[in-house]
Length: 111
Image (tube, rainbow, N blue to C red):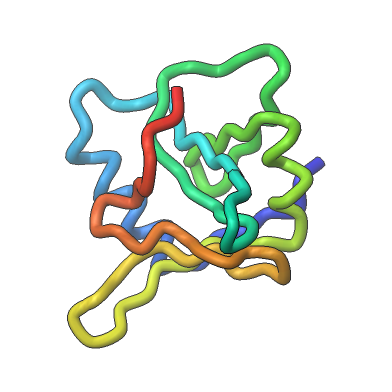
């Protein structure tokens, strides 16, 4: 079981983005990748769920992560923040070097 939580501001923004999607996606895929700057958390809308994925529901939103990403989601809080004119989702934990800081909540495509 993944110990993952979401703030009220992130929940509101995700619900806002979901309403803009046609058709409505099955859920939000969270994935982790590593590059020279460290561990990076990202997410995007998806309609694909594999039998090997970890699937968890928080406040009516389905989150999906593959097993290799799930291990990096424990003790993570997803937040949405605005600083000046910049806003975006932030994955708060002790191993993230970057988060999704884009207005649409997705920093790369992953199917």
